[in-house]
Image (tube, rainbow, N blue to C red):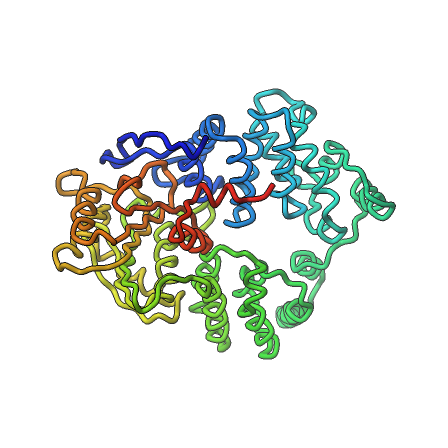
Length: 505
């Protein structure tokens, strides 16, 4: 049973300092919700991470693994690692419909059918050229249900022959049963490659690129008109809009169209439905903040309104609650979250702390490396605060002396209800290598027994710098604003494993 917790084992973290091992289920959770399968972490390659996840899946409760895959996709809004979890689970669990139910709940977009099969092929590549011919029945049955969920536009949007596994390949492998004549006709179009070309920004701009223009000015006018048409069409997806803000500003679209763009960006319902990870808004903000367009300020204001949605439901931080928010800006936190991303783990920590600060009435904020440094910011302007916060990060050094945060409270006898640290959990004492954070927190907890320490793990290496079974310590992991929902559940007496196990299959 996963609820019968194993005795905590003392280990060494990647900085060779004393740390505490997690249960397989807890380690798997932290690894999955902080995973980018498309890039290396500071202390761990993507290949090593995949191997660690595989080993953990084999010893963890299979029902927990299945529910974690669904949770990671539907609640934490991750895409690649849930598919890898399902493929790994299928390799070591069979005899029931657990995998098929998890697949059906995890595949939310038409292209994920092909991505799941490509993942299956990559993981099983050593088994020979016919690896997909021996497709897991659990995955096959789950994908049969998925095929019945999407319409022609959704299939056509992702039907690209350049992929290693195409929709046509998937159709022949999975053999879904059409629910009616209309769907059978749709499946026939997939086979014949005759799906109607979808109206997307990629197809429209690609078609524009095939045209001849007499002058650069005529081409620029056509590009501007096309972006204006796309923004007016209401068919430009939210993620596509975020990624193309610079292109839209550079094209010089008119003020009425910028108003449409900003209204879409700031619409709370559109923000929630898009399920964007918070750092996507930071990336967009950073991309356009220095754009010379006179309309840039309107776009930045809309992005601030969008990220504000991430904070609106956070509770438990009223005028009677004193909070300290500490962001780790040590050297290892400057690893990018994925191979092609400019966003680093330190960015995520700073951003999440500013989202939380937005809801705090009584708050101390700061960063730590070699030393701890306070920094005060207004509660509004989450993205601007994050950018400003980053400017002071290089003043504290690049060690990971997390104990300096707690020592500051001890030395000044400051009582807070919650200490919240956003970190990769690879803490050590650069002065003598001692077990400093554990010792400092134990001392502070003796002074103020009601105080709680929350570690927000942004890397998922599998260890905690503090024993999480005593002295009011809790570890939460992930890059999504949904971690604040978990925080609330924990404060109401639950725990992360219990919350994940509530996921329906």
